[in-house]
Image 1 (tube, rainbow, N blue to C red):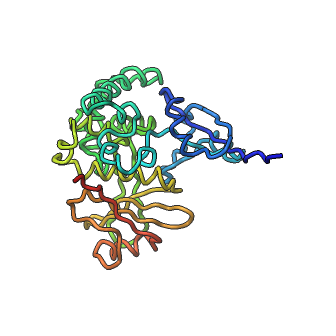
Image 2 (image 1 turned 60 degrees about the vertical axis):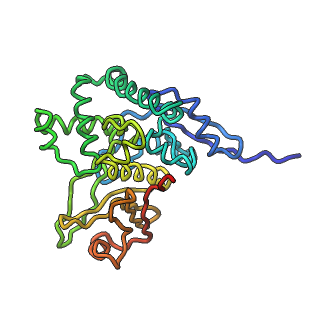
Image 3 (image 1 turned 60 degrees about the horizontal axis):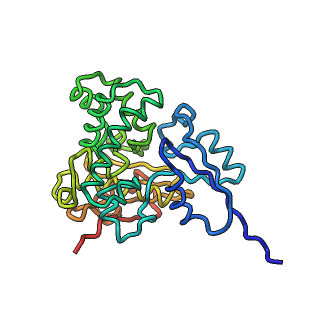
Length: 313
């Protein structure tokens, strides 16, 4: 008698989107044997950890499912691993939403993303019980796009939007909670250096970032002043999706020493630098000034890597 293959159990976290067609794409890459799939909704925001030092908190439901032997597979959009390295330029420009990535033309993709921005603010958030005016959130989202990759400065954004600082903090918490904005917390320890202690903010999907910035095609992106910040955010998202670290931070001092991404995984520290191919950034290394300054402040870095886009010929 043929022995049955070992099954795998997967839990899929689904947001307010049509998930089953996309789930088939993701599961094709994950399931190599028969198994069961449990589709659940995203846990309520109030159940998530409020610990700012933990970048990937688990809800009580997730912890229970992990103890039961279930693997959590969040539906975060198409990853670079899903579309292939050859399509990385298209993936960077259009983002990970399947209908945006698979659109027939750049015009159709941009139209889909602009429509998504409108319907998400005017319909989806309303259905979640959010009473903040859609116009106010759209202005805030546009401002976040222009501050993409920079440290959070609530006072400056509040002045630009003509609101108080507590209001922009509330907007930021909301957009972070619905997974549209990422706050990358700083890593700091007691040392003699003046270290940055404010989080960096990113629009999580590169396609939505480009729609907010008015980038319509690859040529516009290549010549846009935010191309470096765009690549940094895209690379960070793809690294986090691929490695699934226990925690993720950035490290910086006011003397311009910086590590773009500091990962903690299996008791190891991994330093990652991003470059758009034209900027003079380097992997964290003790032979370079930034690396020598970072070394005593972040501890021993087990691995170092630099990421830059492959230029199209």
